[in-house]
Length: 403
Ligand code: GLY
Image (cartoon, rainbow, N blue to C red; front, side, top):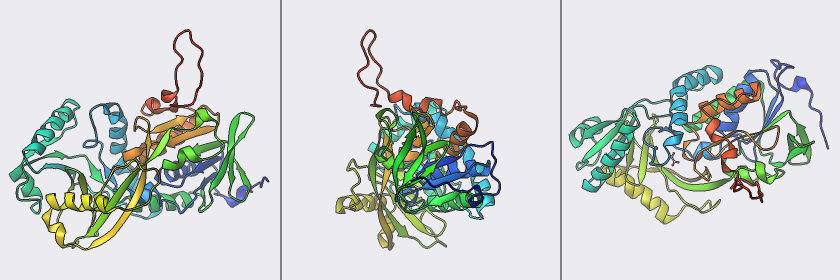
């Protein structure tokens, strides 16, 4: 069944020269793209199988960690991560103006601490890599670290300070994006799973929502995070190779007037993210267990033990929350952005550990692609075409499904 939606149901700022857009997934990525497009005069509908912003956007820690998350072999993603990190202050300001919500961008930076001689050796190796990449990190002695964070373990031996790796409250980001999107005239369908991406005449044509209602659109965006591969209706070569990477997380309650930490702190095994309201977010396990939602004794124990080793005072703190989330991990752990093998289908998924960090660049570059047809240089290396199996010279190609 097809239902024609009257234009008057949507924003009064609609422009007839703009494409209509259906977005699958109302996390920060889908909402960010939707906000930009609705503000530009597009008719935009976003569909989510649950509540908006309650998937990885809710589970995340909100670190904008372009510097400390860089690992040997993943340097290729650094320009994208840095670019988005630089967009964050302006993005947060614009989002607050559009939504009235402060997303609590905190700018103390991140400390990666070493608690013993082994940690120091590892940290030195990482510091040398980071120096070669021009990240501007600083080496701090144990005494210098303790001056900045006096509640860290007395034996803290050294740290790297990453002065540009800040944090936002990701749950507020999701709420602000939802508000901004709706204020711009976008239409949100929550608890409405997409039964199928419609394909007509060889191109994506919108979505068939739960209940059999077709919502036709000129452009369809797949932004369903860890669930992106499971959305029905896509030909194999347009289906992004994304899997769930489980993370268990915990939050403790500090006294907001006298918090135990001010910087984001990474320590062997865990990271600690202090919020303005006194919450101390502790993350995260990295597990290949599909969509297993169980909290485990071992997982929670490793988080609390790791936190306690670095910050002994956590022992006294009440537990505020324990939860599980699913990072959308692609085959090379980098995002999948831009056009796909199916005309009219645009991909914005696979953000893995960096969904909050990459929200501004994804919103800007993907919306710009939809409005202009251009693919910004900064996202060009992250197309799905990088996974397509190439035939050996002189041999026929047997399959085109992204590997
Ligand atoms: N970016 C932190 C995490 O994925 O756990």
